Image 1: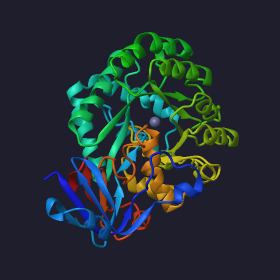
Image 2: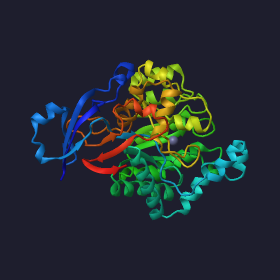
Image 3: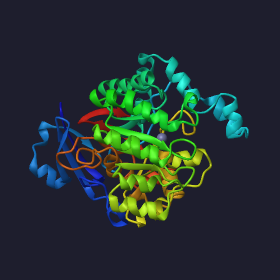
Image 4: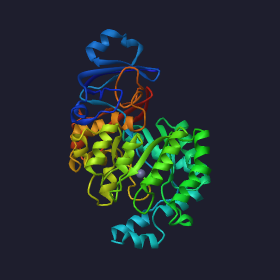
Length: 416
Ligand SMILES: [Zn+2]
């Protein structure tokens, strides 16, 4: 049956809206309906309201009915920043770090992004897809129904295109929707050492046109950072990509305050991500320009960095999104419960803000706020039933997934 009805939800947490939520008032408003119900047909939400209201509008005999008594029902999570397509793991390297080796020592032993570039080069397309699907299964179990995935472990054309193709195949064959981002400018290859601007020209001339013409990615992203790509190089690549039809994302101000947040505002990027060192002015400029501020607390946790100033960002009027940054190096985790714990305990976000950051604002960060990220009539039926009566259990059950049932496109895709 393609018609499902959920009734008697102690809390139906709608996160209602069709665009990003900016500032504290909007982000704290989750639109909770007590004793809620939600009906869906052919993958689309058709009715939202109290159980009494919805039952008065439909014939429940037409539906497969799920009783959500003593449960909280939320939109599926949108993990808006990940690098989940890669070959080769870096567990040894992580172990070296735990034993106190420095970044330089680890690089000298062959660690770093270059290690993943090698592993991704060596993996076949089929292997990358198989690994990707396995990782998506795990994400689904955490209640994720839309994920952004980046290339960036190829750097050069052939492997970059292989990664984008793997993302496409994963999107086609897994319930989770995958938003594809081209991140050829993830690192300066050693052949271009000291000549990052020439590598940007290579990407613009040799790779970007193929990506754009074949619709291989929706977004272009760049690692704008000291000793990687400058603000000028980032501006050049992202504006060129915009002209070719790719929207902008930017790894900004993670390690050094370089002005990535300001650049994101200037070029109207969809999101700027990391932002640990972002200036007050940059944050305010992002709020005014409507750029989503994506915080990645699991990365800061793993690298023992201080956290992005998410509290200040929300209070400055930003729309904050939270994502896992799942990747093979510094942050090998797809754990939404960890992201929730760190957001609430260490970034100073309220539980409500954290949920907005992982749903409607995550959706806005991948250009999908009109179709996912909330429980509104007409949106995709991406719905998660949690095993406790309130959304307040999400941070409270520290580090443990509360997900019981995941419905994706109106079909049950995961049951605990
Ligand atoms: Zn990243």
